[in-house]
Length: 441
Ligand code: NAD
Image (cartoon, rainbow, N blue to C red):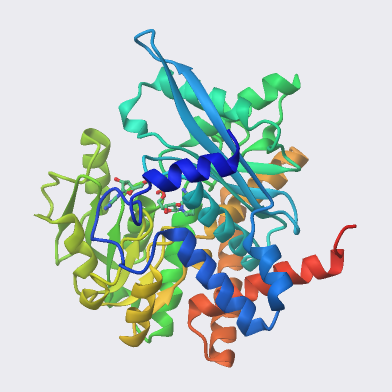
């Protein structure tokens, strides 16, 4: 199936905003790709780059849509649809996660791939941007089925990936185990072990110390920097975290360990609130035992969407895109919004939050810690020389801190929001690389 055919088919079936849960999407936005394109259009205009640059930067360089036929445990065969999009690879190999979720479609993957390009440029790692995904709910499959889905998907996208071409990593619904299967499938086909083909692997098969919590650690650093910027003492500050997965869980833990009072968290099954601060370690044990924050005795159960509207200093959406919309942005009572997730704030919500004086720290800055340590993992794998966890964490802190200061200084100098500043800085770097390399032929 060609991308065009697939796009036509998916466009027909795609619900507006294509979100599984949460408040109604903005009336004026179709989904994350519209938001990503609007951010790029703003940056191109502001930087005076012109229509040629806009055309180059708005179109993905490569897209592959694949059928993934898989033998199920009951002996039947099912066929799933997978995608891999490389938005840009001018600054180095394409880099980006693989998502398993029922919301996955080509437009979502395109948006996430474009954000990866800007994120990698912003934290100055030598990568372009990519993303992949399969339209499945991973919770509906056995481990054996997930392994076969992953291996067949990897084999189908094999022409695009490789340590010098495109390096996948975990995202929503995928894990270290998924990356181990991808690395093994790629390696078996090459005839030798290729550790650098994916990042976010288990440490015992070439993963980096510190990678599992790197995105969360970056989110926590940035939250503390944003609190300080607003003149708030973090030991007297409160935070709310939406999502308790790979990003949200350790973000909540690290914020709590830094002295911030984490008063509420949520996941897809429920939410808990305790104005005195949740015991995050006890909550983590509860989630390990039950699979969800729902039913935790150390707080009061509240509605999942209500967490976004609680009074707090820092709100950290760390679940999925499009959760802050023109329906609920007026009710946000946080002073600072730190985007742990990619694209949690729609364009319309962004404008409302800006008008209300909420400091929005954009995804491409706030959650870049993951790709920074993915880069460290790739460097270590390529050199077959491993760093200590302290070294990884220290280098991560340095990169996040300098990216924060670069974005803040640019935003103040140019009178832009942090999102506009971050996008302009990143787009400028990517376009500079295009300009210097020149247009072939
Ligand atoms: P994950 O699958 O590990 O966890 C997602 C969490 O969000 C789960 O707890 C799930 O229950 C919860 N959730 C989903 N929908 C929800 C809703 N409507 N309300 C409340 N909770 C909901 O995924 P992850 O890796 O933690 O990724 C979360 C976000 O962070 C995504 O936007 C992802 O693209 C982004 N991100 C992830 C990484 C990474 O390294 N994993 C890096 C950068 C950005």
